[in-house]
Image 1 (cartoon, rainbow, N blue to C red):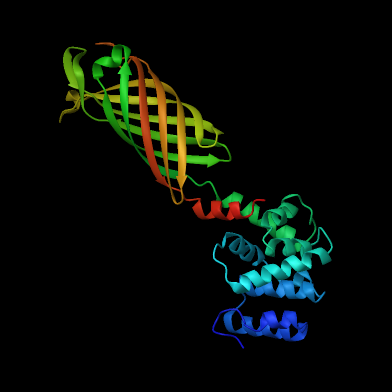
Image 2: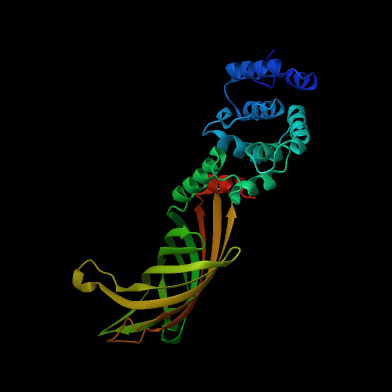
Length: 317
């Protein structure tokens, strides 16, 4: 008797009474009513090992989804505890380094030891090993897409550029990470006036609206900490008018090195960067505007790898 789509209540009794035929019939009736699930597959595998009838034909490509779901599950019921006890009792009676040994380890709760068999190619040549390798390859191919990050920060110049004064900044970054390395395109906008007016050819200005476009590259050096360097161009609007001759853009080159920290928070992540910048003169026919700057930048983005990262962690020994 199957109660809705819960586990059949008679399955533990068939194990205890050593009735393998009735046990398999109950599992098949369960799957006819509820479909093939991770729990029905787990029970069928354990029943077949117990009945000395195990083959890899018992499962298909969905087995990795079922194992990952089992590894990530936190809530257990009495049926789960019973099946874990069955797996633990079967374990001493199966041949080591076989799929049967893997499943008994896994379903008894020793998941890390079970994954280690696959991670070390102990079950090389089995269907289970091929599915494990395929899953890792799929995650690797689908992960690490380009991430768009919204940023806000603060910029404090030194040297000749100190006359511009400190400025708040906003920006966007497009970032690509692969393993421990990353590269990104970063855009920053500084809005406001200069602290002191400066000469541009024959005119004076206190406007300092600047736009920077940078290419940055680096790597993760320890846990969430990154080191990186970059370079690019920056344009400062000294005058802005309706007529083309009234507008003037001062362009310079800049380079930077930075230390960043990134913290994942599930589907979201946040990052904080401290940067040291060097800028060439942007005003060759007026007040020199070269110098250095300290800046920090706070970034927030959505982690598009969240689900894949969770699957990958579930596969790790």
